[in-house]
Length: 400
Image (tube, rainbow, N blue to C red):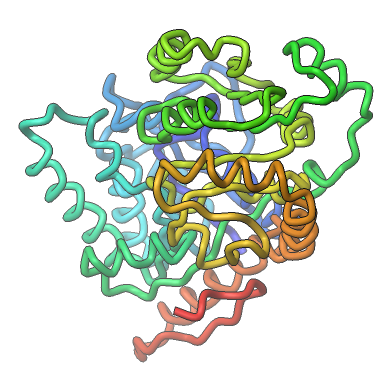
């Protein structure tokens, strides 16, 4: 197949959507398909199989540029590609351009819903305009999704949101896969020890970690405050990443005299990320805005036990106290950490179970599942019968 992926965010930006697209592109190509990226932000250098539409000096979110509504030059280039299917990863400007291409070239369109925009409105608009913006956002997501033959939701939470928006298209839950080998691979213990030493972490310290963007919606503050109630003295919280909330969190650390307990590493190089996971005894995720949460899957593949906020982005795949441990209220974080520190058997149990389950979420199986949806969308486009084609995927779905 020849596949056109349309997105408002792509390299040189690096975020969850870009990582998802790159994982998909690489693994579709391994399966023998040709993949073309249609995106915004023109670069000076020539790129293979990447077409870029000129952008306006406007960002929807950080890293999401608004493109011109139409480019005849790029449309002609897309037409020459003779694509079999269009796959959009945005509802906005490039998404609108994809709908034009789909309609004029009579191509089936598949869409992946990545972002819970209502949790990011504080970046887009002022408080007074949020009600209007929320309705507009829902309308844009609904309209775009209903133009697709299939909509891919990375979790039950994302699917529920789409159904709440009255999306009528076929919705399939397919979580983004990860390159398991990067995280399962053994790392020289000397390198891990060197990093711990660099961060002033003693070899006997129990290390909890958050890794990701440091932003308000990631809800890192209650993780920091939980450190005040940890029973053992040799506990360290390592926060890997950077973002707009870092200065505020550093201030909170100082106000609570936690400078010797909480360590900010700054942005980590991609090649160092697996080492950070393996350096930690526990990974903590407290956000309730994730559609999936790739770091959760990465942590499990690394063999790092997981403490995560209960939400349908994760509990649709993994069970509490089997592959991870959940908390409901923020006040429970320190209680759960203390329990896991004391209960090494439970830590080892969830580590073992997570490693056994994570193979279902490999990048290879992700591409295989998306390929099935492409073929179904193409068949649906050919057929006058609008009945959904039954698809089987390689991961265990939630009973709900």
